[in-house]
Image (cartoon, rainbow, N blue to C red; front, top):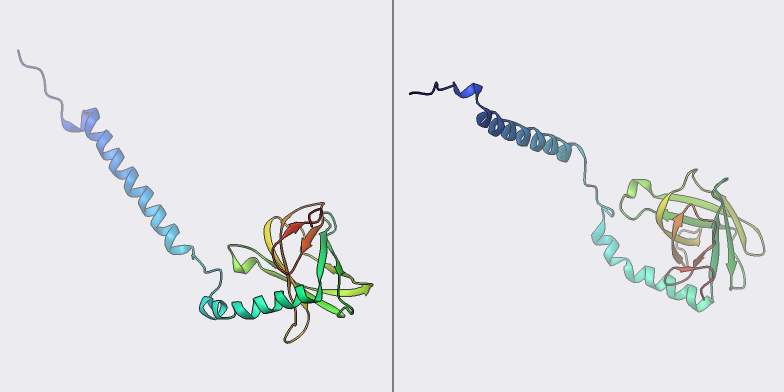
Length: 174
């Protein structure tokens, strides 16, 4: 008794193996195209110069500590108004540079000029729908700023963020 032998193209196993092969080829081709089309992008293109300038940044933060400067920052989630209340120091500059630095994509960084309105209070306008975590820098608007305050914030947030010469801290902490 002989069993009729079916041709290979009518059997299950060759099609299963070919299906796995073509699926892996398709997936790897898709991933290769995505890798070529999307740039990795460096956070700092001039990382070497940035590394050399770190001592100047630390000197600015030390100067802010010597002056006893700190600030309270609030960005209204509805209107995107930026309100900064400076503390310490004798005089306040007319304008401040406020930078929102996105941790992973330098094309999302934002620089805002804040105007002095009264007694250490500064106002400005942030972009709408500010989301995610950002590094924050505040310094006088000048060619060579004397001091710098830094912080970190997650938006949208109703709470004030504390900007200090060193690390970030919530407004309730001291």
